[in-house]
Length: 187
Image 1 (cartoon, helix red, strand yellow):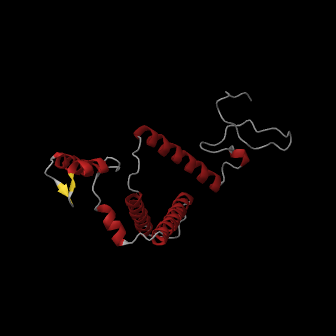
Image 2 (image 1 turned 90 degrees about the vertical axis):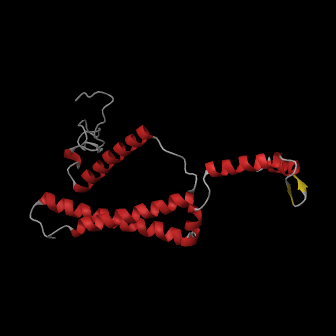
Image 3 (image 1 turned 180 degrees about the horizontal axis):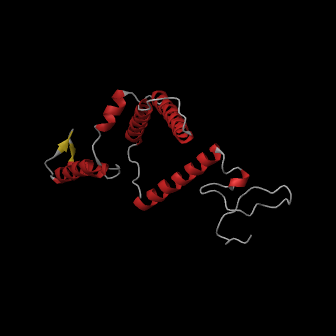
């Protein structure tokens, strides 16, 4: 078979010829139906690849902001992980019957249980790291009370103006000495 060079081919090697299979792989997968593309775990991995590609594309389209406060980001991450776990648990509780005759419903229920189990594992890792890093309630609360960049810049402006007044002194030092000392401080 002749395929366009930009289209991927099944990565399986045909035993009879020792050459690479020429069929198209399943969507998101690396092998065709004939070489294992119909297996549940292969379809799951292919679906995960497709979803990750969609999320990555959306992220590239939207862009992102730099993290300026990793402690707060970590606290937000922990909160999101716990909320996701709780949502997955609620969806599992919505299942009215655990024994299904329909194969598709059984596959959906199995996927939901896997999502919930992974969410619990994620929460365990994040919360254990929070404890290991010593990020207790007090540290996280203090992090939220830090001044914003805009507040810091406003304060610096006020201090600059105040120090320009020759009548201002701090512990007997003239304002110009303090102003010169502050030039090296990162705001």
